[in-house]
Image (cartoon, rainbow, N blue to C red):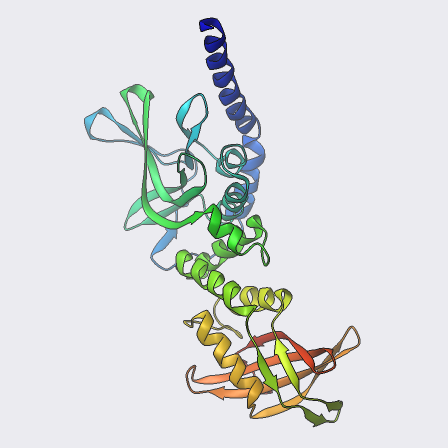
Length: 327
């Protein structure tokens, strides 16, 4: 019996090292992915500056410890324990150590953000810390403190970017795949959002859009006569609005500083009492209708584009605050 227990421990340890071996074997591929991302044109929030120095950055610190400024990950490996890995393999290693939705989200998020930043004059590297079960991660910027000749490693996240759980990733799965969601929130962060605020807005929008109902009173336009009917938002329309008119780079046709509930309410007002109704494009044989109304709450016009899905029923194609005068 004792021999079997011993073998179980050995097998468990081998399994853990196998996981790490798989991760390290793909490190170069992940490094290429990360490098191709950070070498592209990205923007970061104003208080953060990408660090441009090449190579590893190791600086001495008090108490005989050294600080390693390289992408890092801290996770629990069954049979091995808590492991701190350092290097450009955060996205890849996550595939093997986390529950699947969280791992895919993490892979998407960290592939979008820069390897290093300067924050309050301090150079930091991107890092990931997970809970015991791999169902929650914190992604941010910090460093690894190596002690006792590297036998002990301690991760420190100085600038937290986002914390997300498996349930939060699953909550929006009808709109976004986990990896897609990670990329979306990372891009929102690079565009100046607080990543946790962007996450909450996406969650709120996902929760509220399915219950959205507004009544279109109908219209007699040059492109046809349109009967009155209910207007809904489907997953396609919700995803389009979130991605294209909320979380992309602020500027052209973007909603900013508005809650999901307020935005849906404003869209309802446009549909039920528009200032202007006009013909839109014909897409896949379906005539779209453009509804425009000035929103005192937003201090600007709001455009809602709808199309008929059946007699007396319409869907929202998109909604945005127009930047051009043609509306």
